[in-house]
Each structure stands twice: as structure tokens, then as C-alpha cells.
Length: 207
Image (cartoon, rainbow, N blue to C red; front, side):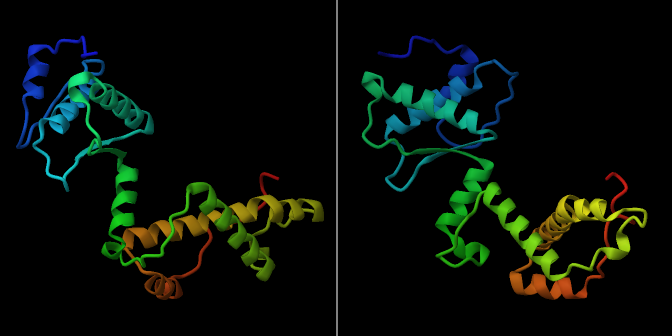
């Protein structure tokens, strides 16, 4: 079944696009996703793409990715738009970066066997490292404790506040390493030159 929606004159102008740069400015709800999805379907079925070429659509959210895919596939399912292997890709900025690193890891000095972990796995690793570091350095925070704390309160600080503090410090250093584009070896050398200071004066005041 062909798409029953007839494009407005401004949308038809967009749908006639085939090459070069084009900027589109429109308010929410004006039909941008519908128009660009139909444009993508038109280009896919026009035969202008070489075998190694594809249409790339980059958006901000996963829901927008799903919306684009649904609309493009819906256009391609119509009788006159049926294709065997639609050569298009819809990705978020994060997803596109993942694709580039996966396809060309050498561009960022990664080995071909590298793995990408999600946020939950990264959080678990930081928690484990923080717990291991604290276990091996149990007296490092003693001078920062509120002197009025009793033994039970100190135990609570070491169970709740200090692990989170270590994780936060680790995150700060990780962000700094990313900003400076440091390799692991350069990062370690960079750490050795940094003065160690905690972002607070004493622990345990909110226990």
C-alpha cells in the first residue's frame, strides 16, 4: 500500500534533494522525521547508491532511532519500494562512535580484540577497585574523620561514604585522562606527578 500522505510544497522540496549540503529548520511536530524518513527511502530505491555506500542518519535518542527505522521500513514495504537489503543505518551519536571504533579500532590505538563495556559494568568495576584499594589502605582516611564519631559511626563512614568518595575521585581522574587523551602508560605517569588531595576537609558530619 502506497503512503497516503501527500507532502507539502516545502516537504516536496526536501524530497527532491539528491546531492550537496542542505539545512532544514523546523519546529517540533512539523514532520521532520516523516520527511527525512521518506527521503531516505526514496534515495535507497532510486539506485543512486553504490554497493559500498549507505545512508547514515544520526539522531540524539534511542527512541528517535526506533522511530526513524520504523518509518523507513514502512516506506520500503510498499509495493514500489521493496528492496532486498536496505543500505541505511540509523544511530545515536554514541552508537555511531561505537560503530567507528568497532570498525576501525586502530584509529584510537586499540587492539582488534578490545571490548566495550556498558555503564553498569563500568560502575561495578569501579566499586570493586575502590573496595580493593580501601582494603589495602585502611588508614588513609583517618586524618579526615570527624573526631567526634564513635566506633559505630566510623564503621558506617567506611561502609558508605568513603567507598563513594574513592569512586568519585576515580571518575575525576578518568575524565581528566579522556580529556588529555592519555594512554594507560601516560596516564600512570601523569598520576605519579599529581599531588593527592581530597575534595573535602572531614568525613562523617552527615552520619
